[in-house]
Amino acid sequence: MNDEAPPPLITDSASDAVQRSLVEDAKRLVDDGRTMLEAELAYHKARAAVAGEAARGVAGWGTLALALAFFALMALVVGVLLGIAQLLGYWAATAIVVAGLLVMAALAGMQAAKRWKRASAQIAEPKAPAEAEARA
Image (cartoon, rainbow, N blue to C red; front, side, top):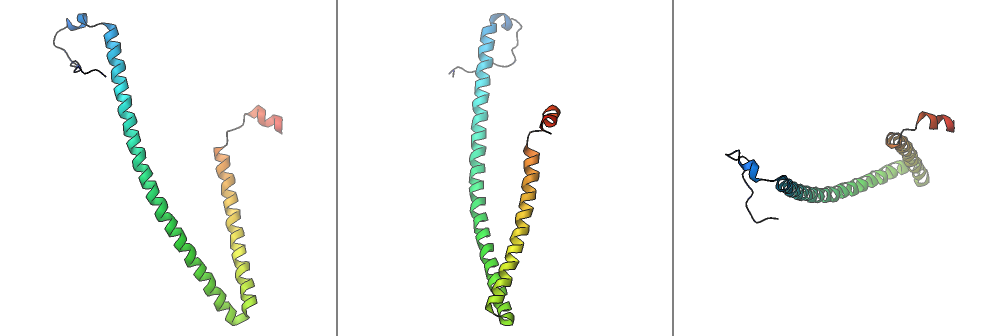
């Protein structure tokens, strides 16, 4: 970059336009554009760094929350198993708890598959009418 101070944006005399050349104005415009681009890049780098730090914190606390929720659910499963075992016996209680968990897992899996299809349909490129008719 130049060590000179930039000229004022507004000059007092109209004769200044005669002294300047179009090439000088173009060079100054390119120089200003380069400066603006460097400032924008520095700004977006700083934003990305702040977002990265925030995402790291969110991921850490989110992981801890999920782990604690998992352990709480496991305690609930053990509690249900022990409660049913007093009524029906250990093998029947285990079968009932496992069956219940498998049913809930199947329902959650079907819901996930449904949402995956909807999301992939929204992301997919629309097919041209001629292309769709050729495949049909």
